[in-house]
Length: 396
Ligand code: SF4
Image (cartoon, rainbow, N blue to C red; front, side):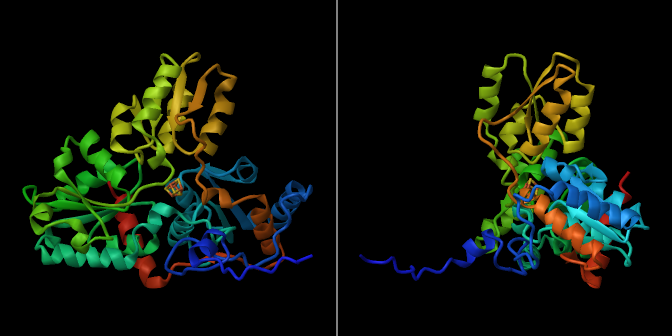
């Protein structure tokens, strides 16, 4: 009889990152949990979370992003989109610990907007955002060199989506730009174009090409030809100096892996399956999906639209599945039929990394006086990122 020999196969660095067992300081993903997590099967997890939170009292403030699991949302003091949550955190200066149930860039924004004596905790450091990872500080600095070489940098205002790393927000602040959310992207673009010569001015929109394109074309009447896509993996972004000079919108080639999955077929299919359905999608979806939808808006807009919808109405929603399921359950009693736009299950995998074991571990550690998984933005980055965020706050 032979015994099986251990295979001499080492996991690749990428596999380790995805498993959360390796760190990549340049990326938002993949960091080993430094503590002993409770077992997911522990029947006392809910009780343990309650007890730790009660022990911490007013010292802790738990933020839950809309895309978080129900088991986590149950312990959130407030829920919302990333910007609302960062502002909620800033409005609670008495809370020593801000536990951010969301992803890394959101915790960074909360750290930027809260006081120096407040500590922001991300229960799982591997909860990154694939979109934010698509624009690194080095790539964006290289892009600026390309724009300078093409002789257009002085006519460009960067506008960065909230879903970007603190480094990218700081780049934006340094170069006279602003941050935007999916709710105020149009106002941010209008402001940016006011800062430059209307004949030659341009916006460099980071990192979500779809939000940039949808806002420019759908909301502001630009044409698709006014937009070019800068691909950081190609020399000079894959663009000629003439193309850069002719463009109004220079869109970074980034996207959300969740919203990018909805297709025109999903829209056509749901209309066939559910006659009279209203299709409501997030502006991170592809342009053709947004163009075919009945309504388009941020997560906060989606929630408000469903609250205001009449009984008996039917809705297909193109956003993250945890939120859609929660809304479907919430509004079922009001006779509003709410379905997920796609047939395929589509959670945000990194948002889902924050689960009850990680939350219990973070809360119990804090209750024992041990700060874990603190997210801290360095002073210089914070200064310039805050500048860009403040420009957004000052938008009319
Ligand atoms: S839903 Fe998309 S943009 Fe939001 S955290 Fe997940 S990958 Fe990032």
